[in-house]
Every structure is written in structure tokens, then in C-alpha cells.
Length: 292
Image (cartoon, rainbow, N blue to C red):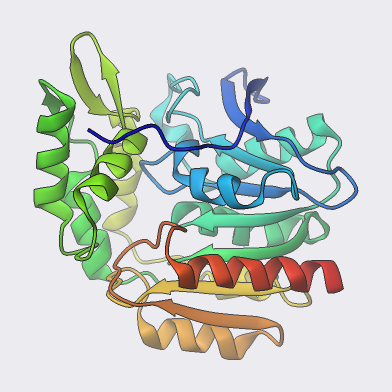
């Protein structure tokens, strides 16, 4: 099994949303003189996804990684209708206000990137810069269909080894070059042990809104994306992504003056910030934020 890796120190902290949901975030210490890095995960993921970001930057930057409601150590919402981007944005703003943070560098993976774009439209001054990880204003139907096949499936596994084998078998094409250790690290981030079994670490009810939205015309997200104008923006795309097309990514890079497009080879949806290309892209974004 995977050995213990050196990880950045963090504190588990909690806050309460405006509608009374107890929400969790990881707080990795760093200087308060610069905006923190605020990490927002994808649809079924959690704060553990951003361990590579924290391991690289904590100490130099404060890193905050949130568990959206219904994920990780955040409470489940009794009303699944609240599993929606505008609600998540309100939760993120509540956290920033509670911590007295004027602005942040947003690192948004997939759904987290959509939330970042929404927030930029409503509260642009809160965004010091952003990395949008494999997401854009146009979402490809192939990716939506693929996610719809697994989201909300409450599969249980008798052991970590069984869970790792299952996830590896289903998603090997997304990360064809990963080692056994890479797959174990990934599965331990997206799953939890509970009552002598291993299961995915999110509320299965969050699939309800996703599946309802999947059958409707897409919202035009271009105005939300363009709200990032005037800030450093990095578009990170997996070369084999089925959610963000190469054409949309190029259009995004052309639409904003200070946008950089970085394509990560041999990766699908989504890059996980352990790739050298991803790390270098975030390095450059942070340098641009400090220079702006």
C-alpha cells in the first residue's frame, strides 16, 4: 500500500452557511499580506483534491480548500435542490466574509470553475486571479453524459483494494500513465471508509440537480467568463478532456487579454495538479497576481 507522504500542515475548520449548513474547509497557513489561494472542487470531489496545491504553496501562500455542502466533511443538505452553483457561491462568499478576506486567487476544478465564473460576475473585486481547471463556458455533451453514468451511484466496496481496482478499471483512460500509487492516492481522496466498507465521499442526492440540468439547454456562461476581464486567468485543460473542447479553450484564451491556455498531455478530465505542466501554470499565475 501507499506509504505516508509528506503533507503540508493544515487545520480543519468549520463555518455555518446562511441557511444553517455546517461546512468544512482546510486552512493551510501562510502570509496574510497577499490574497490566499481558495480552492473549489468538482462535482463529486472534496478539499483533499487540492493536497498537491497545498503541498507546493502552503507557507508561501495561505491555502483554503473548501468542502462544498454534501461533500467530504461538510454536512449534507436536507434539500437536494440546494446543490446548485448559486448556493455554493453564496457559501464561498460567506466564508470569505467570515475570515475578513477581501479577495483571493481562485482555483476552481470543473464545477468549482463554474462557481468562480458566477462569483466573478456578481462580486468581481473578490477575484485577484483564477485558474479554471478543465472547465469553460461551453460544456461538451460527451462529458456530461459520462458523468451522468456514474454520479449518484452509491457503490460500496469491501476494502480499499477493491475500491482502487474498481476506480482504476473505470477511469484508466483518463490517466493512462498513472502508477498503482497514483491510483491509490486518488481513490483515498475521493472515497471514505465507513462501517467496514469504502464508499464515495459525497451525498448521492446531489445527482438530482445534475441530471435535471443535463436534459435542458445550457446556460450561456460566456458573460460570466468575460467578467474575469482585467484579472490574471489561466485555463488548464487536459489534452483528452471530454468536457472542455480544444476549440472552446482556445476561444477562452482569445476572449480575455490576460488569459493563458495550458494543455496538459496524456490527461483527461481533470488535471490533478501533480503534473509538471499544471504546477508550472499555477506558478506563473501566482507570479502574475503578485505583479498585477
